[in-house]
Image (cartoon, rainbow, N blue to C red; front, top):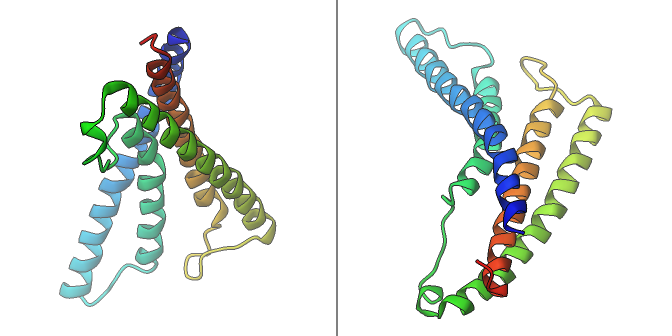
Length: 167
C-alpha cells in the first residue's frame, strides 16, 4: 500500500506542478491586464474591451489549476482545535473518516462538473462581449477538481495506513 501511495504521488506531482505553473502564469497575466486596464482607463479614458471577461477566465485557470497543488502541499485550512489533543490513532481515525467523506463529496462534484461541461458544450454558451466559449474554462475547473479528488484519495490512503498501523 505504501508503494501505491508513493507511485500515486510520483505520478500526480509533476502533472499538478505543471498545471500549477500554468495557473501562476495566468495570475501574472491577470495582474498585468488589470494594471494596464486601470491605467488606460484613468490616463486615456480608454479601458480594454472585454478585460472583465478575460480576468474572469484567467481567474478560473488560476484557481482550477492551483487547487490540487494546494491540496498536495496540505495548504488548505484545517480547524484542529480538538483533533490535535486526541491520541495519534484517534486522529488517524478522524482523518480517515473526514478523508472518506471529502473524497465521496468530491467525486460527486467532479462527476457533476463534467456533466455541466458537456451541457455547456452542447448549448454553445459564449461570453457576452468577446464571444469566447465557456465550456473550456468549465473543463479546466472540472480537471482541477478531478486532480484534487486524486489528492484526497492519496491522503485517505495515508490515513488508512495510520489506522491500520503500518505507517
